[in-house]
Image (cartoon, rainbow, N blue to C red):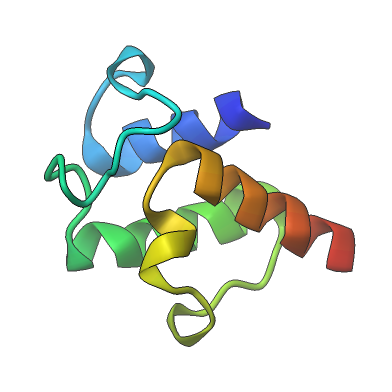
Amino acid sequence: MEEQVIEVLAEVCDLTPDDFLLEIDLFEEGILDSFAVLRLIVGLSEKFGVDLDVSDVNREDLATVASVTRLIKERTSMV
């Protein structure tokens, strides 16, 4: 699932999948900003078939590839 999350992040941020490490802070590294967060939430919702809303997701949920993967795993187990 991490690979799929990285694919979505790469597409949203216009980077290659090789640019992502599991634990780097995507905000501190300047990879994610508020606009990219919106696009990421839409991309993750479409890719994984989960209902994500900006108001349901906090910064910590999207800070790293690992945290995004945990979020998706939690949401897909709720479906």
